[in-house]
Amino acid sequence: MKTGYLIDMDGVIYRENRLIPGATEFVAALLGTGTPFLFLTNNSAPTAEDLAVRLRHLGVTGLSARHFYTSAMNTADFLSETHPNCTVFVIGEGGLLTALHERKIANDGIRPDYVVVGEGTATTEKLAKAHECIERGARLLATNPDNWCPVSEEKTRPGAGATTAFLEASSGRRAYFLGKPNGFMFHCARRRLAGSGMAAPEQVVMIGDTMETDIRGAIESGLLAYLVLTGSTQMENVCDHVYQPTRILQSVADLTQEIVTGLVSSQVDSPLGAPRSSGGRSGHRHQTDVFALYKPRPRPAMTK
Ligand SMILES: [Mg+2]
Image (spheres, rainbow, N blue to C red):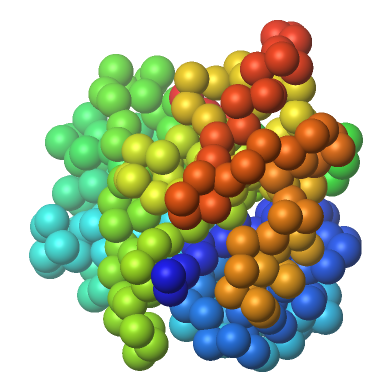
């Protein structure tokens, strides 16, 4: 069965400025076998070209802009498909401004149809201006719901969700969030995979490190959802969630051999070294044994 992959970046391919061990070989296997794949990120600040350069500097070669799909591109796709020729007031960085420009969506600081909030620094002046636009009738839209984003192992920064919460509070209006876990993100990503010039995959796997965005969105969109433990989720927190990943892997390195051979690996699905049960017909099975590890503990919410 031909499989296509949607792959989160932060916590899956790299963490801060460090490559996850085995990520280079994993990407090389995808490229070498002609496997359809797309990096899928909620970070709306960089452009697809920026992300290709960033990975090249980390040692991952052979990638170009067509391998990336960001929440900024998803927001621009959404607006151009649902409201052609609309106007926007933007709080965001280059990736969002470029995506909107490519879809011919004009900036309007006086009476825009939408206030669009993305990742990046929001000054008090910008927030006040956005608030005024909403008061004059603009609808509130955000590229992604993440309230905070990891900066390093210990540090985080406020995300687009937090900026949007400010405007929701000041205006009394509710925002609409694109990006993961919104199904439109996965719908557009699948459409890109199918149009990548290769045969459309018969099944699509989302690989991510965050339960609230990667795994939830994939499950709700009918995709297979592989959780890796190299990012924001620890094994003991998996069972805090109603939705569960199809598989749990230590890292993307666990999949490299499987992609090369086309055979479901027997070396994965047991990150704690627990005894493995036999696979189902497709080789994919839920990690029912993780419920035995359930240890609820307080933690900040990733999304609204
Ligand atoms: Mg991530």
